[in-house]
Image (cartoon, rainbow, N blue to C red):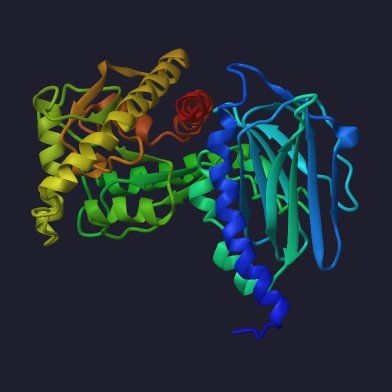
Amino acid sequence: MISQNKSGEQVTGFMRLVFVLALLLALPVGALAQAGAQARLDAADSVITTSRAAGSVDLALSQPVPYRVRMLAAPPRLVVDLNTVDWDGADLARNGAPPRLGQLSDGWARMVLDLGGPYLPARAEQRIDPETGRARIELRLARVSLEEFEARAVDEDAFAARTDAALLHPDGPAPPAPPLRRPVVMLDPGHGGIDPGAERDGVRESDLVLKFARILREELLRRGVFDVAMTRDADVFVSLDGRIRAARAAGADLFVSLHADALPEGMASGTIVYLLGDEASDDSAAYLAERHDRADMLAGVDLAGNTDEIARVLMAVAWQDTAPRARALADALVHQVGEAGLRLHRRPIQSGTFTVLRAVDMPSVLIELGFMSNPSDLARLQDPDWHAEMAVVLADALEAWQEEDAALQGLRRR
Ligand SMILES: [Zn+2]
């Protein structure tokens, strides 16, 4: 505790009383203000000064108004709210940085004064001239210890949430702007390691999709719009949950799983984009989802018991936001593939209970680039020209979606 001289203690005791009065004043004086009437500030007759030991704020008003006074710490600031005053571009002079003036959404007018040190109100009153009806709010400030100031300051977080934060902060040296963050795309080449995925003519799905993922990564990075991470960049096994965890760890904004499976009937061909659904959209979706999960089971990963009731409810809430974004992503992908004249499946958007799509906090899609069980798809899947073209098409789609999604997200936040 910092020791204080006697007069300092007296000032402190007196201040407490007056400070409470200042807050109470807001009520009786409010009765004086005519309904709907707005006071005007007489800037020429208003004075703000601060010295090393004391300070004063005198505001000349065309009529009395309810007011409240609060202190904010780090840095020390005085906040005076008035109900209601039209600042009307008032230019309040001061021997130091002038106060910031603004209007709050609830009708109060706010003045924020940077104090440059710990000062507390020693006296606060509003005097009314009975002749003219004009009013004068007079605050007297006394320098106190930083400890004492901080004990009396209100919590800015609770305070600022309801107000215009821009007013509360000194505009002095601006904090460095956060680096512009690029959205992170998590590319997820399916399978790997002990799980090769589909195999045809000695070609493994796990190798094909890893190769394509690397090409797509280069295409995305070349454009400078996205950052890219991959769930695997080698022929290794990664569990389905592990892939989602890797995406979270990378701060991924969207998740794109890449596959080129085989279907037993051998008839499926063309690109399909899968979304997470409660039920499989058809037998082949059910087959693929089950097959991908079975690879996890074979590797000894326990998929059970990762959702309790509360988690389920929270997930449902998050999903309401994510599902339409994932759907828009699927639409954009299918649109671009179709526009480019690349082969689409006759039902290009489908749904299934794919474990790897279960992150409810980021839009996730699983792209079957083509089917290894179909001979022409298999040929395309190994064609470098097709790789390059498909990578450009998917990157175009991700860019288009990102732009639209960012605009929509901005609207939602408002
Ligand atoms: Zn697969």
